[in-house]
Length: 328
Image (tube, rainbow, N blue to C red; front, top):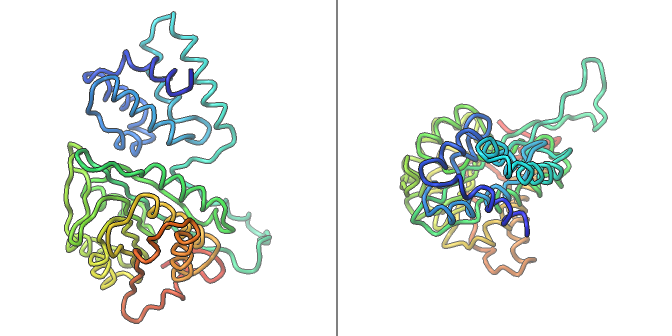
């Protein structure tokens, strides 16, 4: 029996509609609210349990603990004595996979050198930049592979020279007010939307996990408030070129999609794009590499993304990390 089956079997008796939110709140609301917000509560008990376990397995390690083992540990307190050993065994197996790993949610910047020491990486130290990944796939809409996209971006950034200078932060099940909150708290240099879109709207979540359209006009106004810190916006959603045009009236660079883009193309483009930024490349170079990645993967959508810039800005001179970094 694999991990998915074992975990589902252990958790299913405790995941009826009345109790599932309580367990998730106890496990994640305090330290990992993004996980708590990302798991829809709807569905029959068996379906919900499988979906919940699958998402936590995809999420993986949270520093030294696995996301699924955190939930198992909380629910174990309500299990009978005859189930304790099964819970403990699976928790240990999951956590053993996370020894020495880095949190997939936030990449911490390397500690600066102590006073009086000389950096070993060269005369110019890399500036730090935050990439804020905002995900929304509400109920009633076709489900997007948001977890896969975030994981691919994170893994590609880890391959880059300046990986410790890119702070990658994911936020899930985004609602309109979350945009204000996260931009105020994190002050990111790059904002990445992964969601459904139209020519005039992004589809976020409402308070009940249902679709909440947000107009391109509102998105432009949002970034007008944060133009002192945000330099790049990526709208990894269908038909968003028009919205990107509005954004570059106030922000240096934006990427939108000319038409519909498939999950595989969106993921491959974004992962290659951010990896290239992590190697100290300019936004223009990173954009070009993202398009080439689609060609190499034989995904015929390399002409779907479009890079737009504010008047007077050269994307080839915009760097988020590396010796030439100018993140703000």
